[in-house]
Length: 247
Image (cartoon, rainbow, N blue to C red; front, side, top):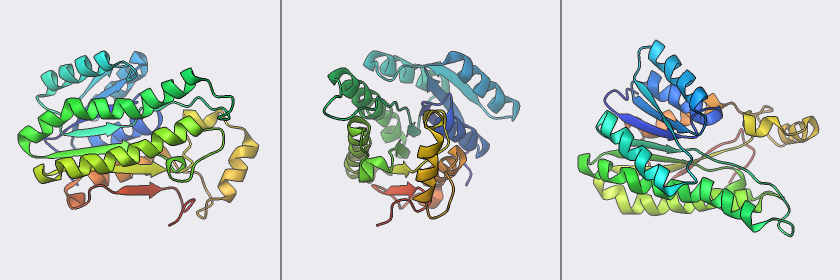
């Protein structure tokens, strides 16, 4: 599963799933451009990757800003020469029942989780088209497939990523560019760490494998889908949820 010679750009890379993806893709030989708002955590990640003998660079980025996305990806391409793997992972939650949800919270989640993926894809796809090879991975969610009370904005954004994935797969397939989504289930990250123990216990009861997932579980799926082993897979939603949702 060698990714030597490829360059990956990963959003939301300072922690959780994004961080694990960066470490895994670097381990497989890719050079990685890691992007997030937290410069300090990015620097620590780059140091860890570099100490293992791989190539990495940090790019501070708030994906809610279109201008930052454009300038940051331009800088990453200037440094590495190309981007041919994109992992759209950045995401936030602003939970509330829909009848009480503020428009600002709706807009923030849709902008960060969905619009940023469209903008990042738009900025890197030229590099992929030029060399007729590319891999785009959108990190969706099981709740984009089944919904979740109190998360209308989050569920809508993650469902939107699935539609975006299929559209891009159709548009770019003839140029040897694949686009797939991964729909994690309950994963142990900073985002889920704030949830109460009772919620977590109830969640585990819904998971046939009897445990919550880890960021490494998702990173392994990402590594597979960007590898040549998955070259004939596109427009697919890979559920990594311990059996939480079947069908």
